[in-house]
Amino acid sequence: MQQTVYKVIGVVLVLYSLIFGLLTSIPDLPIIEESIRNLFYHVSMWFAMVAMMAGSFAYSIAFLRKENLYTDRRTAALTETGMLFAFLGLFTGMIWARFTWGAWWTNDPKLNGSAITILIYLAYFILRNGIEDERKKARISAVYNIFAFVMMIVFIGILPRMTDSLHPGNGGNPGFNSYDLDNRLRLIFYPAVIGWILIGTWIASLRYRIKNLSIT
Amino acid sequence: MSNIGLLIQRYAKQELRNSNAIFSLGLYLIGITYLIYLLGGSNASDNSWNTLLWVVVFFASIMQASRSFEFESGDYFYYYQSIAGPKETIVAKLIYNSLYMLFLSAIAWGLFSLFYGNEVYQPTVFALGLGLGCMGFSIILTLANGIAERSGRNATLSTILALPLTLPILKLVSTINRYAMVGAPFDETATIIGSLVTLDIAIGLLAYLLFPYLWQD
Image (cartoon, rainbow over all chains, first blue to last red):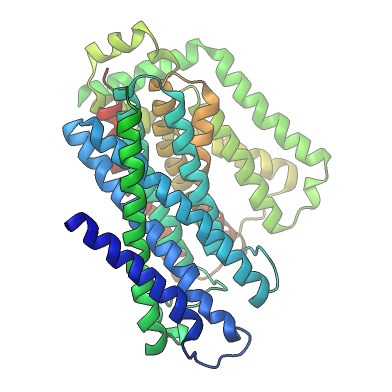
């Protein structure tokens, strides 16, 4: 029962944000214009990614404590799902950047941060693929995953706030207030974030079950 | 604790005996500096000077750290485990690698000053940035090499693992050193130095806590 409830809530919230994200009235801002609706689709991807990576970080710590291989499969599943959201966030962001900043890619601290994040986690998969022994693989990749998560938080959470950025709310001014994130947007944005996190949890749990089944 | 000193001594002796390795690092530093000189590095602006110095130091640290666990493979792993625990090993390795990197970066700075002139306005701040950066590199590269060593893979893997992780540090130190070159007011530099110190301590602590999980069979 519990298993179904969160999936239903996730689907409903995502559908709500997809549909009403296009229908809602938006603040009238220069340059960004109608593209502000991408807030619901682009920013929520990054929130979902960080949530997935935080989950895999927690499971990595849990693995090092108990050495339970099921925990390791959860870590891998969550990281894979996090990567999916990272790529989606990157693509939606590139489209947004093209229409507001005029280029697909700019030398912006947040863009660098997300590119580095993707590199860090791709290295994680390379590391996992290279080790035969299940237990050794789990332990070594847990160590790397914990380290990687901390560096990712530094790179996407702390460094961009210290330098100027094209993104709103940066340059010593963290938060969303400068976003003109008014209540109309919040009403769609927060459900979108929660919905995508729930969908991500669902995807990860499916990946986890597949992993368990493919162990023969 | 006394074991740590002994281990560091032992690593240093090993390195001196294996003088081939030191000479290859020295030759790399001189060769690459001269190569940049030939390609017109002497006309480089402050910014490019700084960038080039960091690229040279960065690759030197990758080369240096790639041999971190050279002598701990195979049966030697058990031998070292019998004389020192993982916590002592990692502390000794981190201190040894950091000192080694400080030495190499000092040489690189010296060579750059020799060929292109020393254009640093605040040498103390510059040296501080260089030192903190080298410490950060050493910590990350040592851990990455430990991972690569334990997973039984070659040096390529450690570079793949370490490269993205070192970029935040590289970004911070190059900013500090750029400020030091132009002589920015100290309170502006101090915030970045403060965050770099915090980052170094945090990753050092993390490496210390995580290494024991790596260093077992």
